[in-house]
Length: 448
View (cartoon, rainbow, N blue to C red):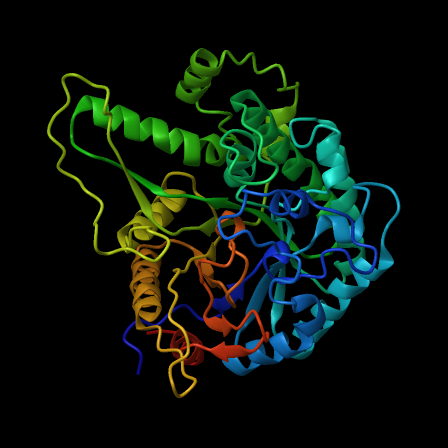
């Protein structure tokens, strides 16, 4: 008997994204994405690799679905590659691209696995980037056209839709910090890109609903717990600013609260931003009612105001030992706190954890087994944190482990392995890790 039972009808799944696993980057009419261009640019990816082949999921999806079925997965979250559907961003539809996702969806349904489709997981068609990318408002109309095409084709079978994955990462890492595609470095562009992500989300929700009767539609945000390094006014203020940058800038407007005033003032002063990209009616569009919110959680960030002259001694520290291979602190308490915040501060009616997982490089031993006990421990701690939140009344409806299999980890290339399934990139062999076999038991028992 499980001592941490999850609610009846709780959904257990895993997640991936198109560029990270599909490969077939230029096959069957697919156009170039910003990640194709970025990864082919020398010096952008740490190990010099690309997603050209990745896990070759485009050709091996049937076998991958069999593995999912064998694990007892109840749902699978995957993303659509926009340039596989509309190679020129808009206009002519590539039927071969649609057919691939149709076949994948049919395979999932035949295996009794519910498809959760993410429309945008960062692979913007390069041709749209050449026309200004997300800072250009025309990209909003392009996205709505794309969402219409995909939801018309899959809407009879797919009933769970996510418009955008982690708009913070796409906008700020892509257009301000430059360490993600398209690799631009201008703060004002990032704010414009973020705003257009949110407007595109708002405009596409009613389109998806019209094309997919009875569907649930939402958006996924990445949130990290921002902790002040001490109780000093300086640290508390800096932590609130960090929270505003990563969390509230997206969480507030999609919940009808506009952009947070403190952050508007900060961006106005720091970036000399006029916010002329905000048009009448935008906030009403962004706050379109949705059915759920997806949460991606991995770690926390301890914030310190190093410039303050009257700061107190630091009392809160990130653990130097309790970290994953990607150097992120293991902090399940942050998941618990954020889940509570989403419900009690924002009254979000349904929440899915759409990503949570850990990077560890454990490989096959001499018996062909992958004993990734550290990942198993990470997941167990975070499942426990989620269960605590549910006991508080938080309406958590499902949990998607990141990731179903090792894959191309963006700017890290293949140096980081988040999968519960080992992938040999030379042979494309898949091996279920110990964490996957343990997860199978969790799913079967609906608890720990």
